[in-house]
Image (cartoon, rainbow, N blue to C red; front, side):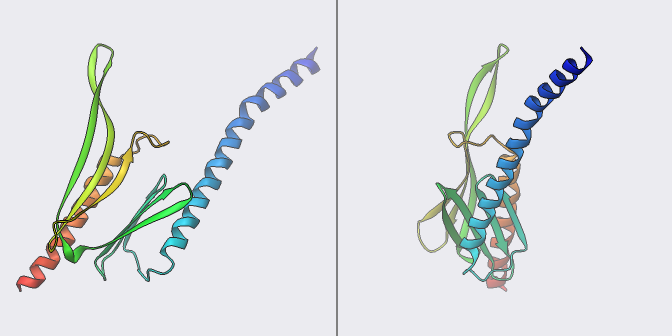
Length: 167
């Protein structure tokens, strides 16, 4: 009786632990694959980043020496690279779209999408960096705070170029 109970405990434990281990291994291999795609996309850029951040399938990097911002988004194993010279940026704003949903008889906001939009000085053009979209396969992971940090960095370095020109 003791042996059969021990076998049942062992099998039950394995059935609970193995799927978790399998999910961890898959997650790590996916993260490594994304990091490799990003590294390959940055190979020819010749930038030395002073600040970088990678989450889900996104990458943001800033080179203070060249005043360049890089945004990479991985879509279906393809990398979309956006290179922005902050010397040409006029302004920057965060665009948030929320949807209210009912939870326990109260309305709570749910983030639908989050973008940083950059406006340029010479042309009436703008570039949108999509940091989060609810339709992607990832959950929200401090994207609002991340967007505010990067907006501050962009505005500080945009202002540096304006003060250098004025001096």
